[in-house]
Structures are given as C-alpha cells and as structure tokens.
Length: 219
Image (cartoon, rainbow, N blue to C red; front, side):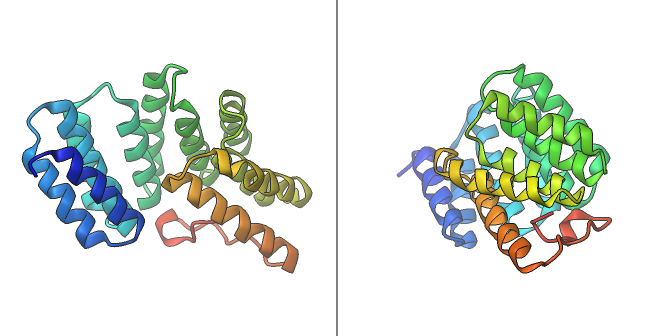
C-alpha cells in the first residue's frame, strides 16, 4: 500500500513491541511517501520517538529538529525534543524547549505532559519548589495523569519525605488506567511500582548523575 498512515500505525505497533528495526523500516517508508509538511513533521516526530526509545539521542534530536522546522508552532515537538535533551544530559536546552512547548500549548490539550517534562528537568536541576509547582499544575489540568503523580513522588522522595512519596506513587498506580497507553504513562506506572517496592525494602532512590541519560529512569 501507498498510504503512509498505514506504515506509521504499524511502526507504532512494532515500537511498542520493542521491534525497533521493523518500526524504523515502516516509519522510513512513511516518510518517503508523505508530501505535505504537517504530515512529514508527524512522521519525523514518530521516528525521533523510536530513536529516543533506543537511546540514540543524536538521531532523535536531529529528527525532532526536522519536525520543528516543518511545523514550528507544534508544541508537542518542542516538548519531545526537550525530553530527549534532558535524557541526553543537556538540561539548559531541555528547559528552553519545554518553556517554548508550554507557551505554545497555551493551556490547551497536552499541556499536562509539557508541564511534567519541565518538572522532570527542574527536578534534575535541584529546583524542588518549581518542579512541584509544575507537577501540581499538571494535576490541576489533568487530575488523572499518572506521570505527574510519579514525578511528584520522586521529588518528595529526593527531599526525604518518604510518606508523601509513597502516597504519590500509590496514587499514580491508582489513576494509571486512565492515563492512556503511551510511553510516558507506561514509564510512570513502572517507576511508581519500582519505587514503592524499593521503599518497602529500604532501597534508596538512585542518585542523580551529571547526565540523566546515564542514570536509571526512576530518577
């Protein structure tokens, strides 16, 4: 078939299954078939997401850059590039992208994820109060958004407030069924489960490293 949507959808399925070679094959085919800029931007964003899953942040950032050039008013692409930059350890540029994403979301759909991504970066920077403010706002906008509760739990745990941290992780799990099936919700559930188990066994949260990409995902 010559419908790029078919290849993109199958690429997403392969990516969810961890079959990244097949996912890349299909998204590359989709890119070769699309002609209009908005759809090409979406295709490059999808491929960047796959590279990010694999951990190839250079290729991920390159593809997000193409998506942004093609659709410079799309907040999702800035949010995603900011997250990739955080994972690659470039917190200053990550924060720039996340600020731009939140500006473009203008309080509309998707802003909760943008706020969580920025909260994660602020947490790595040691900006506890600002991180909590972003997680709190994300929860106000989308009360059943698991990543916000997990982020808030990690922040409380880092601050030594283990009781509140456990409550946040438990809440993340309880609302996770309503948070969708995407990467971020899945990661939030897995992190909440891992930290609850660790807290119950007395295992400390992993220490923050200079480059987040070299730390475990729980931080």
